[in-house]
Structure formats: structure tokens, C-alpha cells
Length: 153
Image (cartoon, rainbow, N blue to C red; front, side, top):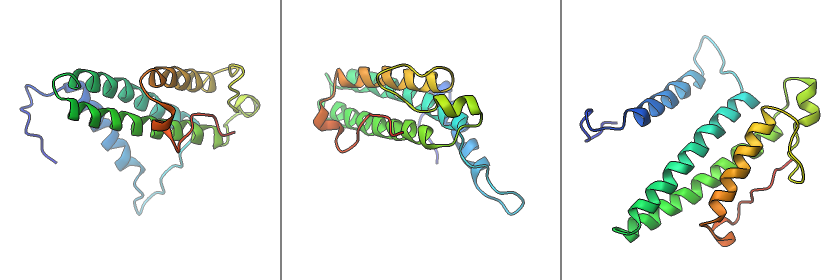
């Protein structure tokens, strides 16, 4: 895939993030010599961090595109909603994966009525809750269906 944007004008941090994701995807692709390592909680925590950062960026892009170009802003807002749904599914998958330690096994469940006891559960759940609050200020419940934002476990 080539970009029409000259390298001098491109956004270097986004290009680096994209390159990192492509590298990670290649590393997870099975080869003849070794089988890929299955996803684990730390892996999904980092992916969730990336997705929530993308959510913030997509939200800002939709806000800035909307006044001069309403149709483009609506498409970006729709992409933002779909990205939230993907983020929510990654959060749910995190809670369904087995924990690596006995302490995590006891605190691994996400309880909306209370904060989890420690990292990485505390971190991913706080991040997800903050992203959900931000999303709900601009999105109706109908926009989010059929996906829910509740923890699965």
C-alpha cells in the first residue's frame, strides 16, 4: 500500500504506530518453524490501550470535519462508533482469557459496581469506563446496539 502524502507532510507518529501494528501482525502469523503465541491478557491490554487512543483521535477528527463537511463528519462518527464496538469486544475478551497468576484469577472479573483490585484489570477497566463515558456524551444508546458495554464475566 502506498500513500499519496509526501513523507515530509505525513504524521510520523501515526505511521510509526501503523508500522508497529503491521510488525506485530507479521509476528503472530504462523510460520513453519514456530507456532504463534496465543493472545493473553497483557497483549489485549496493550491492544485496548491502542484502540482507546484511536477512539480519541477519531472523535477529534469527526468533530473537526463535521462543520465544514457534514457528510464526512457523519462517516467519521460512524467509524468512531464501530471502533468503540471493537474496543468493547477486546475488553470483554480480556475478561474471558485465563489469568496468569492466582491473584489475577481472583480479581480478573470486571464488576461495574466496584473497581477491580489491581493492574492490569484496574487499568483496562478504568480506561474502558472513561472511554465509554466520553462516547456516551455524543452517542445515543440506539447507535450502540446490538453491542453492549458491560463486562462479560
